Image (cartoon, rainbow, N blue to C red; front, top):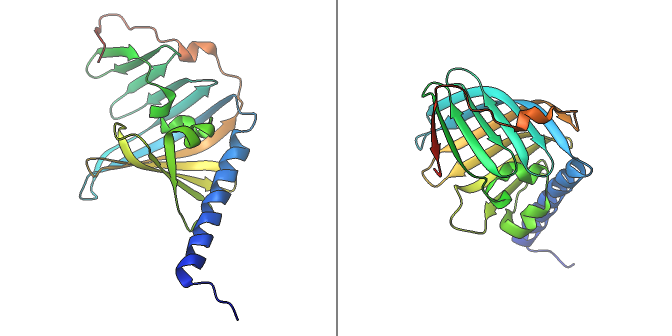
Length: 200
């Protein structure tokens, strides 16, 4: 009787698992033009200790506009309007503005444009068909590895491991596909009296 070597059998299972996870992503992104969600974010340092924790709201509008609104303890706004990326730190009374980075540098956009996976990332083998793990092909990225977690066909969390040993987990709650979003969400208005730094 022919027997498949155990390591080949395991490799087949892993390949099938990440293929299933990729299919979940494709189904979620099909016809997607906008989304909104609440999020909670936790960052662990290189020793596994919590170093930062926050909650807020996320909005996305096709093709590449988004807004991250962070609440307490350090309110911040990050707004991408398609041309510029604005970062407002309320506690510092400071706004930084620069050219919006390419889509390849944002693992968030993988949720809405799965074709970015094929162009800019390498999918890693996994034995869980609800987890899609990928690494940037470029060595210049801000993270080394990302994992996207699904509940059924809905993205539920994104984990990012950076080059300094930190792990950031973003959990998505009450995610809505294709909501009607106010265009003003993606237009940043500089608050009066704040410092504006350009090109950072």
